[in-house]
Length: 388
Image (cartoon, rainbow, N blue to C red; front, side):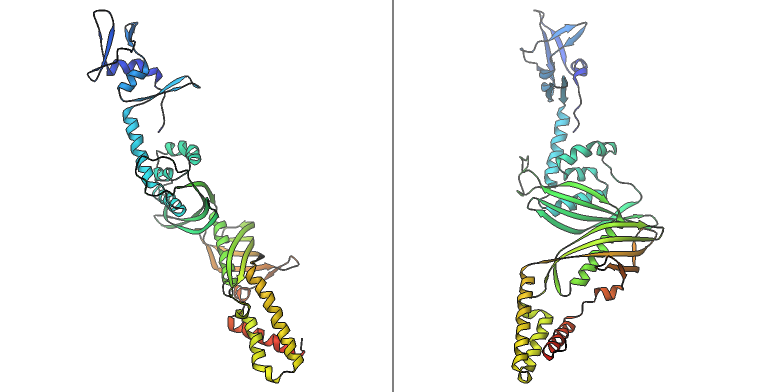
């Protein structure tokens, strides 16, 4: 609540709210709401006005008084202001997020509802200080009446540390004529100090929104598109531990966007033991089915190959692998700025740094598990038969 400097209005305050009388001995008494102000308060008349010290008069009226030495001013908050501040504080305590996700959800709900008070309740003290003038200028009603936020979705979350999380929130907007595109926010949430509360504590956990960064909707869509491509490509045979996408360059025309993006993935094979890996299954299957017709040298060669891949695959299982791919994408956009993946051109950068066009289906096709078993079987056959 904004504190106002009331020092200049002290005389008027006394004149309007107190009754003053002169005793037989010349002393002046001040009566507030029927109660006599303490006898140790010195009251005098100057130029026809009753002058009294600020603090005892204000405190008798239920106000709170603070002396600001730096600015040489007296700050007075009335009892009504103090009660209002306490009511707001109690409401904000009820809204205190108990989990990181709760914090970002409440903030997003405040954005969708255009409710600056709800947003303010869940942001950090640093953000409060920065954004308070903005909220007050808009009288706590944020956003615009059109387009408005129709819905929001938390599309990604990532734990940065034990004290911080990062979220990506997509806000879909609309007007009276229909969808109006999307806005994207990257929201950082951190653990808040567990200070004193007025009300009974429901949870010892306290979190708040610490940072908000808006991102162009097109950038978000491109990154999400590439993340989905990585998931489709690797998800069939690998466990994706981490996927990150960064934008290298982007060109936007009226109805098309062309961009270069770097995709990084951290994976482990989707198997618990080397013998569960489909190509290794094929190698083992070949040896088991043909051991009776193979020579001793061929059997030794097959067993050596299987042992080699057992060691290799165990390393991949134990130690996650990181891979990078640079892609170029050209994709059509509709009038609301949404990407139309039906009209997309895909290129990947080869080891020589050249972009090679490829269909989405071919680029994603690493083969089914059955096809990889057959591949392992055939590779082993060629090895023992000396065809490689």
